[in-house]
Amino acid sequence: MGDNEKSKDNLTTGKVPIQMNGIQISIREARLDELPAVCTMIGDCFQRFIAPDYVEEGVRECLNFMSPTALEKRLAGGNLVLIASSGDDIVGTLEIRSQGHISLFFVKPEYHRRGIGRKLLRTAIQKCLEANPGLSTIEVHSSPYAVGIYKQLGFTAAGPEATDKGIRFTPMRMSFSTA
Ligand SMILES: CC(C)(COP(=O)(O)OP(=O)(O)OC[C@H]1O[C@@H](n2cnc3c(N)ncnc32)[C@H](O)[C@@H]1OP(=O)(O)O)[C@@H](O)C(=O)NCCC(=O)NCCS
Image (cartoon, rainbow, N blue to C red; front, side, top):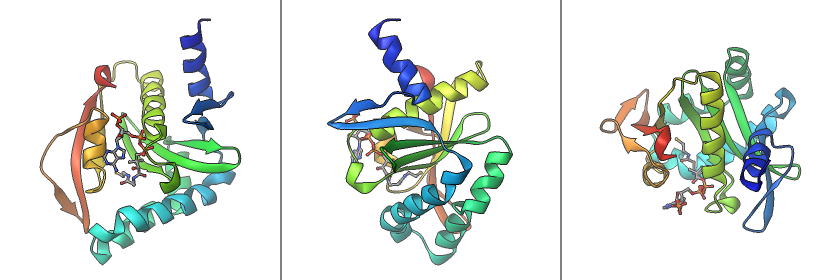
């Protein structure tokens, strides 16, 4: 196995941490017993970066969606949650919903802009392709905060910003070939 293949394999399995801007990051699927810690991390991140753009109803809906109980139910239904960890610290998450829809894309603020989000996304795409080799696009409902970041990651808007139950989102899409 060449170096590239090794690092791709490590990235997918998370068995060996990868060096990213001076920190060691592992990416792997979350265990059920880690969901409360996952929810605490994303809850803090949500309050800081997303909640300020939402009305009360939207905040409530999102907090329900991000609760450990709701997350556990979705995992039982076949969704996957990837986590990026640095030692015991969960520093990033991404949920893969059926047929190529992602959500819960969060990286702890102190770890932003080190490439962790991009690595999580690449791993998510690999997982989607393993589950469904014919898939050609991945979709997300972006928060107002993240629209520019998703564009940087290769997504384009699939429609104008919309609001559902107080949640403001822009539907966005990316073809795997641009990941
Ligand atoms: C979205 C998020 C997960 C990205 O995580 P990250 O680890 O910082 O992302 P990366 O470091 O991999 O950056 C990905 C790209 O976006 C760009 N980017 C990241 N943050 C940015 C910012 N605040 N402004 C502009 N560009 C930004 C990076 O430069 C990078 O592009 P490049 O590789 O061409 O330089 C993180 O910003 C976050 O948790 N945001 C708050 C929660 C949120 O809104 N999530 C989306 C829910 S739909």
